[in-house]
Length: 490
Image (cartoon, rainbow, N blue to C red; front, side):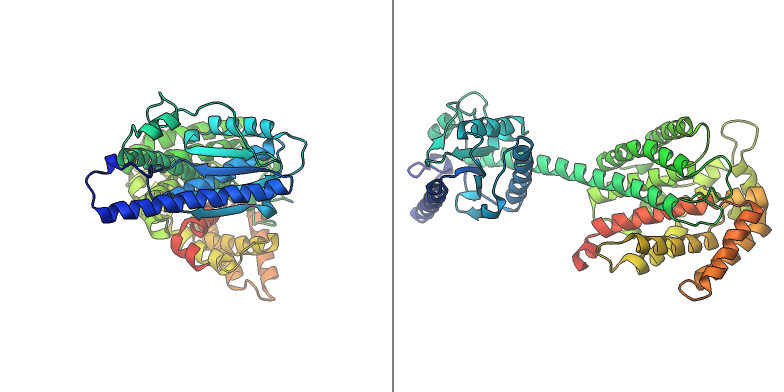
């Protein structure tokens, strides 16, 4: 706070400016007096009260960034108090900004815990907080007396003298102090946002896997009630695999959020390293069964790019596609057009050699910016979910089912091409397109059953389309949460 009689660090200023500053000081003192009276009102009712304020030097005492910081600290404080079994009466809380800054005041329920004990716990909160010396959690007892710990808080800037000592002597210049505080608060808020974003993205990725495998019945694919065309895996296999993979989702998101190199392709070795570790853990958990290799590939890139987009700019489908393309460059030519690991050709290399563009598989899809996802799947998901605030299980089921159909109809699944040939894949796509077209009509169930029967009879499992379904649902959820244009219209 600016001392009412000393402006030596403000430089040479005219009387008008001095009058203005003195007016600000009076308003701050008046605000503090009002706060004191409100504490006394709680004390008159026999309540212990707790308040939160910030130690912000100079003026103004608050701005948009400081308000956001105060809000974060208040949320932290409430959780901290509850974890220590201190119950506050939130219905009677006071939250407001005034000339002295942002202010929170609330009575504490019951008298099981003394004011002195609450003060000790409040000090522990300040001590554990990364910017705790900017915080003041004050306690007023049931008689209206402030509870003091008797300890002097160290100065935030020099960490040598008590804060009161430096304030009274005006040891530090206000401009310099504000600069330091604003930078520290900015870093704090950036870190909080990173944590929140990466948690969201990792949760979206897991939701996408779980909803995909839970969709039932599916043509040739594992679901809740059937192994589809598979004899080596079931619903539990997929649940176990999803659980193992989920521990890596936050790591990939954090890598994407922190990545700052101008050349996005420099991220590929690290992404491959994480992906290979995920595959190893998947095979270990499933006893050698490939449940999610395609999903690891697609979701890994999608998590990385989404986090990087959100950190650097507003997320959008267009920017996502552009960065996916930039990241993967000539993936098909590099991995399918040349022998990387041995003289023996892989299934992907043989498929590409035999079928050309149709045999590019998942590599071709992601190199092209996931056209099946954005040209076909996302519009269908949007038609089902855009107007829904809380998407129910039945709505998710119907939306994902129709989306899976459009994906099967347009995806050149290299696994089916390799194992069954082009004729079978074309037939599968035709039946799926017919079922998609009839979706929502009285004829749909019959045509959908035809698709299920065709996959069972031919032992077909369109796993590539299932992986794309998971990526489409993931990307849709990210866009719904982090595309500002979408957010501002909902």
